[in-house]
Length: 238
Image (cartoon, rainbow, N blue to C red):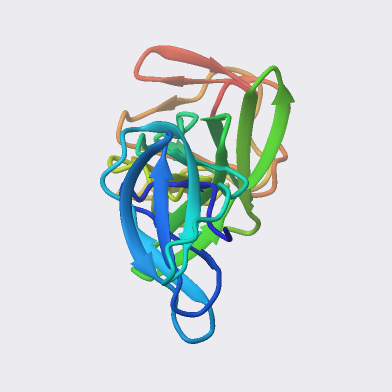
């Protein structure tokens, strides 16, 4: 025999070697399931009947035209696994100003790949593969970093794939909006007063509620401003 030992194919193909023209009888769990004939180079192959999920013992015998039958071949074990894995995806914040977009989560034992579909602000799609980490005790985690990620809306889909080739049919999808780290700027207010030098004498300064006060040089370090009856201390946001 020379065959896959772990597969999600419920009717796997098995094949082996023998004398040209010999008849191969294939047995699954000691029950004959079919026969086939070896070709001119002695190679034979056969699709097994539908097998249940689990491990199955497969052997074969060869017989020639004279009716001589060989001993049973050494057995192989074929494991049928049709159960898809599932990757968890650590929740992302709605918004972030981080320069690097960090992605991660957990997967069950047996997962060999976490495939990421990255949809960035430019509308393009890129495929990436996460790194897998053995946390011990049958627990695995995955991680992926996008350094210098573009600002804007991102959509990330994480799909787990196991050793048998099963893919998660309902991969988890998360979205995040990356923002610039600059502080927000209020717009739409008329600049009615621009105090750029320390010319305010001691005592309160009364302003109309629609006025704004800017301090582009950061030179005010003490004192207070009264706006519509509310006293604001220096350093308190004015």
